[in-house]
Length: 116
Length: 137
Picture 1 (cartoon, rainbow over the protein chains, first blue to last red):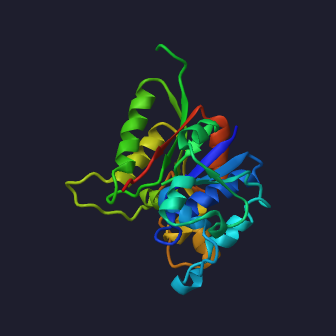
Picture 2: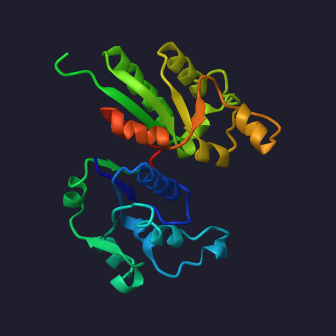
């Protein structure tokens, strides 16, 4: 059963995205297939060159760069939201997969979770 | 009943008194049990862990949602679990965590217990449905 964890909030304004990420890593740790989808303001998670120490937080960029190593199948990102936030493909961390049709993307998964 | 009974896991991520998530979840849980469905477990995540604080003291003319949930869980022998990482960040601890971190108190309401996300992972494998109750904004 393949789970899709959806993140729709920016990386540093609240803890809920971070806790969504923990859910994904936890599934992967138990060898359950899991992918992440970033939509809306959530696409900002994937921006390169984040300087989170300026707001006394840990950068999420490092976690996402390690996602494949920890067994996350794919980092999917909403193409339309990327355009809205001025993120072209070169601005995103390596290995992200832009998607255009969110509904079709979600339909490919058995379990879709928007954790909060 | 027209279909097979479900065995649900409920995930609550909204805190009592700042969101309606725990109240809505309890309404769902009561209705589900009344109709012959099973609830495998209730998992508190993120802000939802505040539901397991034994120290909540709402005014007497308001529902005490932590107490109402504890009563329901005990009456139906349903495991209630607060995610350990969420709980520790927010100051919700049991006796074991109090000892481990040398804290001055513990405040986890019975019958809730503290455990890891592995409990939720198990639910994704075993329960027939997982229902999420978010705070929403």
